[in-house]
Image (cartoon, rainbow over all chains, first blue to last red; front, side):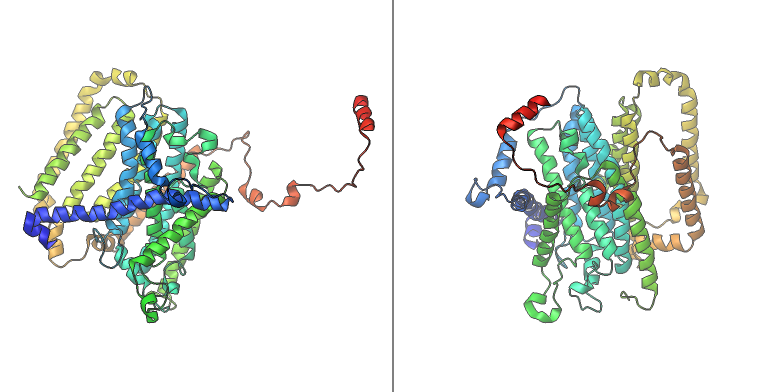
Length: 348
Length: 215
């Protein structure tokens, strides 16, 4: 950084340095997205006693590249009477929040692009904008199927955002901070000495489950994928998209999955903290590798859900969001508040 | 011109353009999306003032929730733009008067010496003076000094919500609604009847053929 600042002057050097950091986050993220699609096909394949893609490259490892090249070569079709500007804007609107949210995600104590005070709020605000991509795509395509998908998706995302927000209220109560670094560091303290039992998932277990399930619903993944609903409304909101425009929706969905996995790891699973007590030497040391392991575990659950559960019916989704999750989170927050005031409190 | 000033002017230009398009866009969906852009840009202004909590709350509440529902409604309405434009010039004088009065009120309030706008410290100066983050300050104010007003506002909103639901709720007689609780509790013996039968011996082909002919 000093080198860049001496070369370009302080402000320009800072800007270039920040751009390099953004690149260092986005490039691995995109590779992660590409290989998550392969992992999904492989995992679901083995769960269904198939092998999955194994033709392109050794063990099928080059499959994502082949898919990417294929999508790049395809024509982007604009439907007649569509709103062309919005039609092309929609994929951008859907991938922007999935990337912008990474600005405040910490990878360890110091490795974070922008360590702002209200990073939890920032995450909630940015991820709440993701729904615009879906709505605009559904409306601009001038198709009834995609419009139905957009309506379903907007109602679903607004409902589950509430439950997700309430689950996060519990987290910020125990850590008394909106800063993600502080939230992780708080989980390293407590009677279990920073090991797996002092993380938020155990004392906040109901909120953890609600957050995880709402995360699946927010990313429109099976069993909450009514916005796509292949068997009912063809492919939902992106039925009119082809080629790279479709690929961007695809990228956004997987980038959102990785984001939710990262957030779940940070808020409830101790982020970069080791699951073992600090006295275990190298195994007990906190490192970014632990964060990646936890994210992979959460992502595996996402794939596992998709291979296991049938799609929810629409009224069941709404019932789960409004009549089950929101009351559960409200009662949990109340109980948590009483717990924190009582002498048995774990968070002093 | 400092970096902040450049950002301010760019944001302001976008904000004014978006606000203008909200009023002039022919398609109501486009207008609603420009309104989203306007909110988002306004939150950028608040970030420049270092009021990060307010900026994020604006995006979270207005962009993330209110405008989504608004867009949802606007998309489903079949709005005839020609019909809406019919009375434009007829209603223009009244609308212009209302707009002028509102503008004058805002200017008068902001420029009056009683508003003490000159005394308001910028957030940056407040932070430099050793005060804590504006999330904490705002929270402390809301839950101590303005607790009663805050709670009253919340209760009023809740009442409004319950009333709105109460007005629209009605049970349809012809809807085939199944109680999910019943669905979840269902056992296999409620749905499947296992019939035990003695195995029948395979008969001669000729016999079965003649049986079929008789049937």
